[in-house]
Image 1: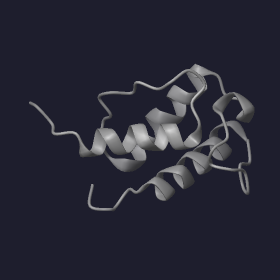
Image 2 (image 1 turned 120 degrees about the vertical axis):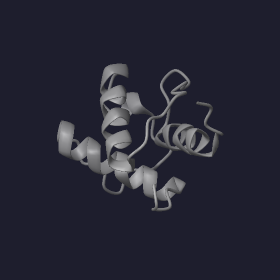
Image 3 (image 1 turned 180 degrees about the horizontal axis):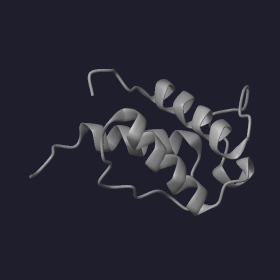
Image 4 (image 1 turned 180 degrees about the vertical axis):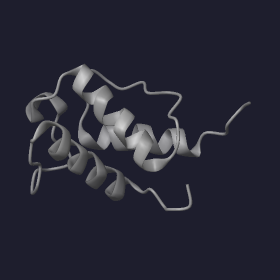
Length: 88
């Protein structure tokens, strides 16, 4: 994970994955948009997260999200995982 993954980069990646996987274009949509407004259910969000893990080259251990998260919520969850100390 040599690249810096900040909130904006993670949200851009989520938008790109959503477009490629579900053909949902989020260009110009606010980052505060709720997942349900995008048209994704919880399984769709998990699919996006798994693809994001592959893109980032890491495994997220705690994917606890609020009900109907926003793109910002998902990005913050990823950042929390990146910053968490890993315990082998």
